[in-house]
Length: 197
Image 1: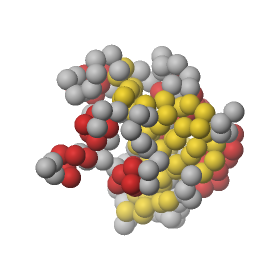
Image 2: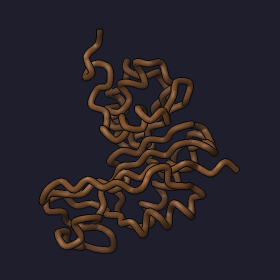
Image 3: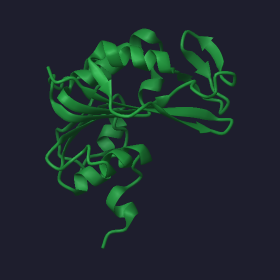
C-alpha cells in the first residue's frame, strides 16, 4: 500500500481539503495555472485524471517530462495562454498570483486563469495577502509589499477578492481562509464556483 507521501506528494493541504469534501472527483479535467514542478499534481496523475497546465518557467515545464502526458503542459504566461476557454473542470492557482508586478498584470493573470474554467467549475487559489498582518507589511508601490520574511509580493485583501469574485461571475464555495505564518507572511485560500451561464 502506498504511503500518504507517495499517494498525494507535497499537495497543498487546502487543496487536499477540497478533495476530502468531494469537490474534485474522478473524470474531472484539472488545469494547473502556474504548475511549477507539479507538486499539486501527484495525486491527480496517479489516479488517472486528465491533467493540463502552464508555467512561465520553461525549465519547470521541462521537469514534468515523463510525469505528465507530453503536450499537456506548456511554457506560457497565464495572461496569454493558448488553451481554449471553458476547458477545465478545476483550475488550480497555488502560490502564483502574488508574483504579479502590478494591478494590470494581476488582473490579466487572474482573468487568464479564469477563462479556461468551464461554467460550473471550481477555481482553487492560494495567494499571499495582507489579511491579518496589515501592520507588519511595508508598501513598496501599489499593492507590492515587503513582507516580514524578506520577500516582495503583490498582496490582496478581502475587499479585492470579493470584488473580483463578483466581477468574474463567481461565488465563494468557502469563506476566505487565511493562514498567518508567525511574523513571516499570510496566505489566503480563495475557492470559487464559476456561475453556470
